[in-house]
Image (cartoon, rainbow, N blue to C red; front, side, top):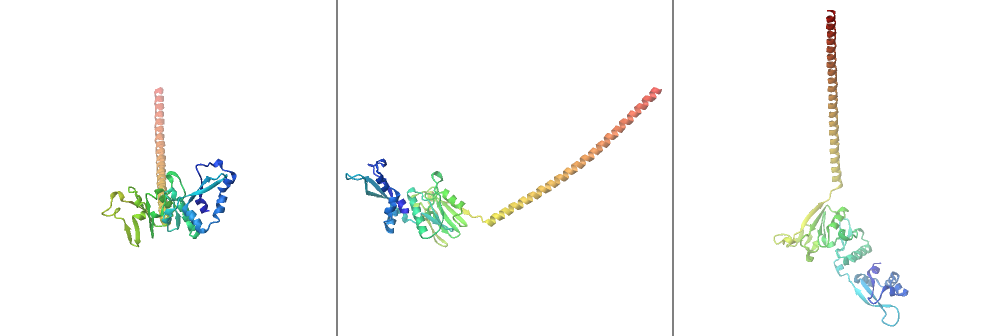
Length: 305
């Protein structure tokens, strides 16, 4: 199947698709391609995959009708020599990457095929996304280091892919160190492993033109460290939040009780005021009544006199 994908048919400029006969079209179908490839040895199939041939279909030069082919164009996978680029092997397993150059995309498919043949499980394959959201991840930018790992960000690996890896926890380490190339962006230093490498447990090799007294300012890298938050820490934070919420609820309850007590006191005060008011109003009425009586008595006395 991979060999079938690797071989293509192209029509010569002198021939058009609508000019082909029915029997000619049959020779260009996948069934005929599969039949022809089944006759090849494993070594020959590997050559087909690595050479990526395009068979140029031409009209027969003789007077006979039909098609023939005498020209085969090759697009060999020469960059497959760098077989650390098509994938990264994290603490969790093999992740098939996504090559920056479109012409190198077939390399990832080849390596995926190889891993399956070797019965090495692939834990993830970066999704193919077009446009600005395209994910690019190449193995030359990845360096494992025990509980830590380093990932370069620049010409060949982009932020979108790193963010995707972090979001899906595909690195599997306690710390992920992102080494970003913002200003250099030179092909001689296109991958992280061209300027930085780990030689031993406590020894690393670093290019002196990106760090140290001889460093060229334009070539310096920006380093960002990401640390994993464990579930226990999350649970602890959740517990702290819950405790705070409980404390807040208790405070609110206390405030509510206090406000109710204050309200009750206010109501009691109002009742007392009402009583006093009624008493006062009663006394005023009594005074008015007595005055009225006095007036009546006085009026009666006056009348009598």
